[in-house]
Image (cartoon, rainbow, N blue to C red; front, side, top):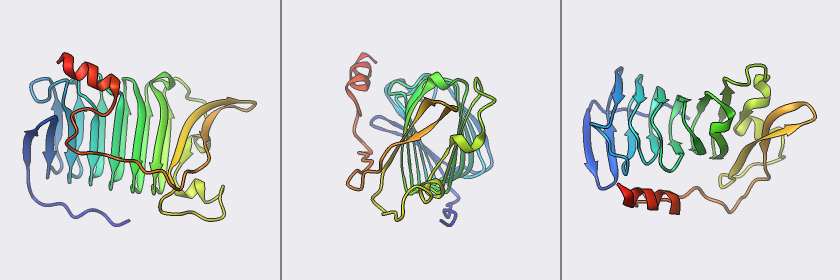
Length: 209
């Protein structure tokens, strides 16, 4: 996957339930409650070489068409969800529960968690390399904490563009590792960009704010 061409724009606006940032290059930004409300998702698009420190409570965090980015998540996410798609070399440093991760059509994505308790599952489709790190499990070999197409190619004779994989942690005889469930050729990761809520849990807390 080639790098995404980035326009020279710096636009920010609120659309329904989104706080949207796009066209940002080479900056460090801190996102607080002055920028995004708890019932809004933070959506960063078409940006490169940036670091975002998210201290605010958000609905969830979405990264789209970004390159060479670090996203530090310190604020609670109501839906406990992070989504990334069409991006390359994005690292998430996650210090709060992010129980559901979604990654689509990315080259390299890395998830650093402060504790394994903050992770539950990853759904991915057409991602080359995905890596995890858990600071409370520093002894785990890196090869046990990787996923993506390179890994899937060692498990299956053929892959299809519609293949969707679910990845979870499991305890085995040789310790903790990522467990890749059987692929689902008919499964798609669906996203309705302007939908106000994405789950019953998010909906109830959305209404509270």
